[in-house]
Length: 86
Image (spheres, rainbow, N blue to C red):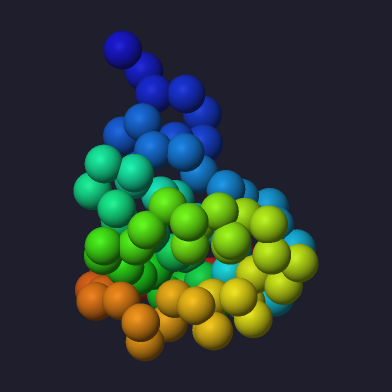
C-alpha cells in the first residue's frame, strides 16, 4: 500500500511552515523520534522527545526559536545524510 503524500513510513510531516531555519519536521509518537529538515540541507533525528514538546513546536509562532530553546542540546540526536538545500 502506498503511503499518503507527505509521509514517510506513515509518519506525519509538517512542511511549509513559516521558518527561516526549519524546512519541515516529522514526529514518530511510538518511537518518540523527531526528524528535522533544516533549510541548510542538514537533517537530524532527536530521540526520546515527548509529545508535549512537539505540540509546543506545532503551536510556536517562531519554530526556530522554539527549537533552539526546547529541543536543541536537550535530547540525544543523530546527524543524518545531508540533502540538497531548498
